[in-house]
Every structure is written in C-alpha cells, then in structure tokens.
Length: 195
Image (cartoon, rainbow, N blue to C red; front, side, top):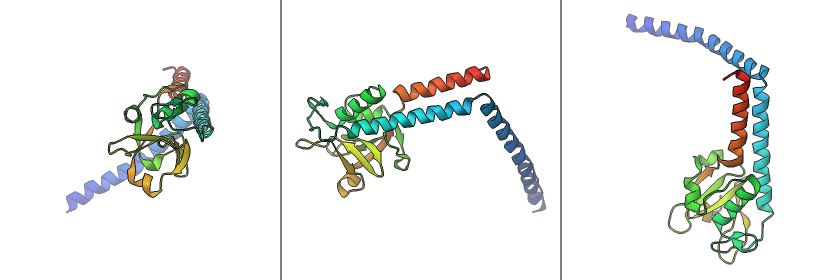
C-alpha cells in the first residue's frame, strides 16, 4: 500500500506544479495574439459571420407567403423545401447548396440540436425516409420552410408534436462566404506571426 501512495502523491504534486506553468503559457499566448492584432481579426470574422447569418434569416423571413411548388426554386415559380433553402443561401451568402434535401444534409456538418444557431439547417423525415424535408432555423425553437403543396413559406415551432416526432437532425453550412472570411482571417494571422 505504501508503494502506491507514494507514486500517487508524487504525480499529484507534479500536476499541481504544472498547472501554473500552463496558465503562464496560456497568458503569454493570449498576449502574443493581442499584440499581433489577431484577436481583433477573429472578433471581426465572428461579427461578419453573425451579420451574414442574420441577413440570411431576415432574407428568408422576407419570403413568407411565397407558395410551395414541387421542384420550385424561385419566388416566381414558388419553392419546395430544398429549393427555398438553396435560394436563401445563394442569394444571401453566395453559397450554392446541392438541390435536394438529403444532398444538403450530406454536404453540411452534423451538429447537436443543442448547438443550433439561426441560419443552421434542420431536417425532418416527412416521407418515411431520412432527410426528406429541410428548413432554416431562425431561433427560439422555430424554423422557416416551404412545407407542402397548397401551403406557403412560413415559420413553425420545431417543438410541436408533428415536427418533433419527425426531427431528423441539425446541420451547419460551413462552406461559401463564411469559410472565405475565416480563411482570410487565418491567412492574415499567419502573416502576422510569420508562419
């Protein structure tokens, strides 16, 4: 028993002494990033992405009432669900998503529903197959979509019994203009640090 207690106490002592060293390293890194202006650049990128996401949601809200049309992808012809999502991302962010809902799910990053932010995509199983319906999350448990024949683009509550039973997952679009901003900031940061 003595042999076990001694090594365990030594490990604890080493870990306690290493913690202040790690804190110093983190502080030095934070100062370096601030000195090089990188933190400000990253904040600007975050702000730009947030503004574009807000623009996406505002643009989508502007299409409330446009009729559903199977295969539709414009205000003139009407929208189906994936045509609506594709048009909003293309118009607002310049990002071209695939045409069909299941293709949009495959082309985007899976996220936990607890991480949903306005502009993320939400998928539903409405036709007895995965990812058969898609909408854009607008916040507070609501999403905007083009639901079905005879209906119009509208906002609905994801927590309603119909949608909650059919929820298939959440995805985040990482490509297009958002990634361009992030890549530009990373390039600028590398230039400032000499990498």
